[in-house]
Image (cartoon, rainbow, N blue to C red; front, side, top):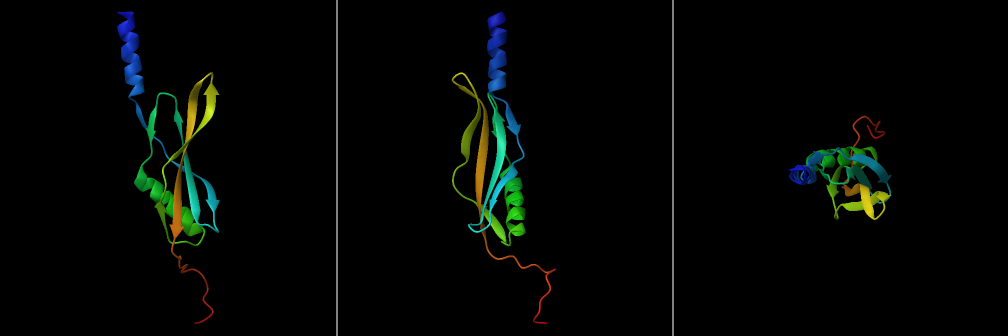
Length: 112
């Protein structure tokens, strides 16, 4: 009975999906690249909402003078905590490419 309980608990933990909020980790203004990161623990199936991530990246792009952001490439997983031969914590990086030119309406225009 004890083995069934332990096996059932492991199966429940392995199927846990956790929503994570990605945060801006680095900005590259000359190349127009924004990187967002979120953490994922061992035995977790972490995910991040693509719509919210796009809004976060677009805000970061607009702060650099670009208009929009679009995701490119695959998420990059990097192990941040190793215990023996297991990776206990990962950082997932999502990259966005900034495009366009943002017009700032608050800027003073010398032509009129």
